[in-house]
Amino acid sequence: MTGIKLTNLKKEFGDVTAVNGVDLAVHEGEFLVLVGPSGCGKSTTLRLLAGLESATSGTVTINDSDVTDAEPGERDVAMVFQNYALYPHMTARRNMTFGLKTATDFSSTQVDERVAEAAETLDITDLLDRKPAALSGGEKQRVAIGRALVRDPEVFLMDEPLSNLDAKLRVQMRAELAQLHAKLQTTTLYVTHDQVEAMTLGDRVAVMDDGAIKQVAPPQELYDRPSTRFVAEFIGSPGMNTVGATLDRLGDRLVVSWADVGVELPADDVPEETVGERVVFGVRPEDIHRDPDGPLSLSVTVTEPLGDSLLVRGTTGGRELEVSLPPRAGVRAGDEISLAVDGDRLHLFDAETGAAVYHSMSSSAAQNPDATEPPTVTGQ
Image (cartoon, rainbow, N blue to C red; front, top):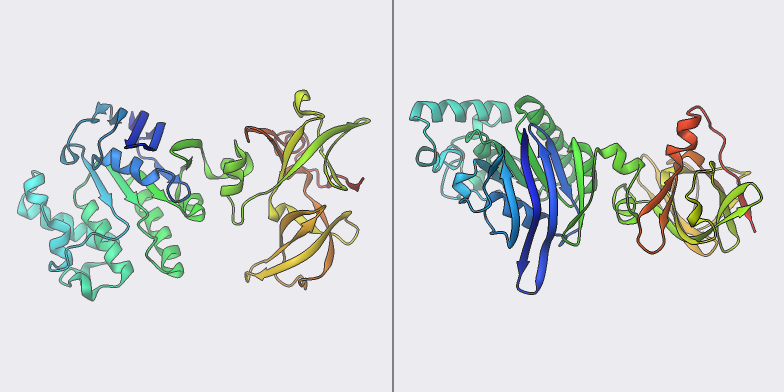
């Protein structure tokens, strides 16, 4: 059974198309994260699913029932909002139970039992008699999640529920949400603009841009095999380096080059029609390493100490590049450093469409998973 299915879903606001033909299936019991930049249509998609917006066209199905035209209260979903949406004059307990007796068949005893169970699960039992003004941001969010829990819905919808929390609390709440889903196994669609949040929480992640779904896959597959240049640059922190280049055959070698820099690809399974054409070469910052004998030269312009790593920005062959180095690499702005790339972690994208045409992991790494020799990088 599919928990949620969106079919050719479209939403227009006048001349603006916010959601443009979205097809998405969330499996029963799955935690699927919808991620994308601000304004891409992800929150509108969630509101269409909740019934808070009406679809211009397309269908919304929950547990094999068409609910496209159903009222929000008829969809058996519970939504957790970014701004908590708590009534300031009500206690946490009252916020969690408000409307529950009229919207469900639960008795007063059952309601009390469900509140007690949700409060224990979320560790907010001692907060039930407090009003929102006496709660921290994290406590307010727990109450908001508790309000969703007591309804025992078929589907949880979460719209950037952690974005108002500080960095440390976001990490803590991410772990708690993951533990909560592992316990409840309720079908969940979670919206965020934070790709780190998406990668750490989702069983699968759907990447959205400009009202459309660009790729749906498990987090590691998105990272290893992005289907488009947009996904490659969006997923990862920082995202993938991408450089306009040319792919040429030099004897028995395939080399992608720009300016005076060339990188040899480790396998000869690149689509033949791309040879001799403009492509976009991609490599992640963490797949580039410092090598005193490496032939790739980077003129460093900026360094950013991140504690566990040192992010280095610079230029090579006139193109900007980001490199993730060990935290005590001792690199400063103005330095010229030599680098090498991981041959099993290279990517090519179509220069016109942005579609992926080659991932070296799927070729050389699959053929020889123990290979550690980097590809040749040459000046031309």
